[in-house]
Every structure is written in C-alpha cells, then in structure tokens.
Length: 171
Image 1: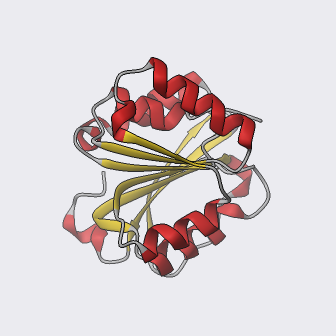
Image 2 (image 1 turned 120 degrees about the horizontal axis):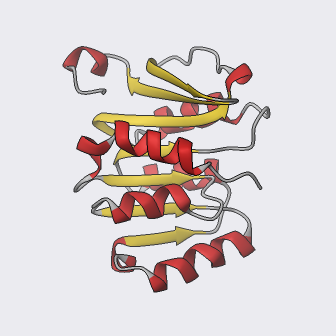
C-alpha cells in the first residue's frame, strides 16, 4: 500500500479548490480513503469510495464515523472496474473522479476506458490519475489530457472528456 503523500495531496487539492465545494466525487482504488476524505473536508456534497481490500474499506468506514460528513459518503468494497460498471448502470455521474491505482500495472488506461463506457463523468467533469512519472499513460480515446503535474517521482494526470477542454472548465 502506497498512500498519496501529503505534499502531492495538498498540491492536488489546491489546484482543484474551485471544483470541490458541492461536487460529487468518486475515489477509485481508495486505499485508506485519504483523497475522498480530503474532498469531504473541503465541501464535496457526496463521495463514493471504492476499495477492494476489506481491511482498507473498514479503515475508511471507521474514519468516516469519526469525521463529520459520513452521511455524504458511501464505501463500496469491490474491484474498481466492476464498481464503475454498476455506477453507470445506476445512472450515476461524478464531477470529479480520483484514481490512485497500483503503479506500473496499466490500470489508468483500463479505468479510463471503463469510465468512458459507463458514462459516469459529468459534463465538465475531471478525472485525476496518480502514478509514477515514468508510467505516462497512452492517449485514451474519448479523453484529453488537459494537464500533467510532477511531484518528485509522482505524476498527476488530469483528463477531461473529449470536447470538454474547449469549454475552459477543465482547470
């Protein structure tokens, strides 16, 4: 388990500050839930955490019981791609999708494809993926990489749906 460092998390949320308040957030590969919990603390209206490890899902639940805002959160203990399909079948949509998958395993392109197929990114929404800077994901049809930020060995890649980058709302 490699949680997002505090420095990377702070840089991410500082860059997203205007987007967080009132947003619907999906935290994929949630781990301990640090990203989604930070979104709740910054005023997200709803956060869905997706984590397949039962121990980590319980850690998130425990943290939510301590924090204000647990009534605005759900924890799904399942694999990310199946959760995306189910969220899509329910007609769910998110303004911000955060993903911090295991590094070097090709999860970012697969997850972007699933997000696109399930149509769970709201118009004007943003997907932010974290990975090792050397693991730059290939271009994925349906998405435009609108920004990249590097913090030491860690990179953050920001994606908007194709066509959305012209709206000026990506970042």
